[in-house]
Length: 112
Length: 114
Figure 1 (tube, each protein chain N blue to C red):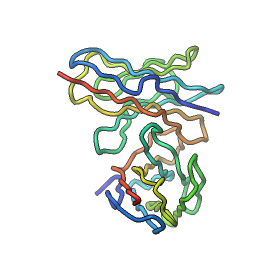
Figure 2: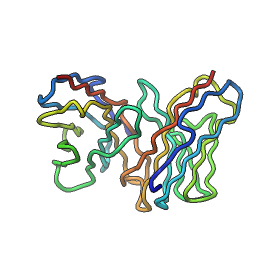
Figure 3: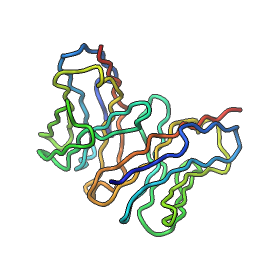
């Protein structure tokens, strides 16, 4: 069965530092990958998605992610974070014809 | 207003009562979904619907009932609420092209079962 593992439940970081949120997926066939962000007391919104093509995907708010098929990873990165990036981040995956499977989430806490 | 809305935003009920959570979207998206979010579990799919009158179970369907008589509405009913159903519930929708498209989420309903 397909699964998504977010390797860190919490990531504390100082403002303007780089950050990487790690995500691994398990799948034997082609997969579509997503990162969603959830700000406090809000629903989820899409940061970026990988469907095919270039393995480096750029999203909103300066985030990017790299699809690595050999390592079955889809890590999210930002070179310089802001206080406003404090949120819960979810990695998700699905295969064509199935529903999204979400990881358990990573809490990014940015402090000054 | 355009988008996806959920009501109520907050609900407190008692064990054994029936509760219905409403979800409404204005985009005419074919697919709609119900998730629950619990600490340590992330989001888990309860039910989804590919079109009006077509629904299917997700990962955690027990204790829930859904219906979809109109494309824009996808209510979720807890027939006899239990404490384990205390959670935050999110509704989402996506376009006709399918499940690999972006899902748009509502603001959530925080349900407490006493």
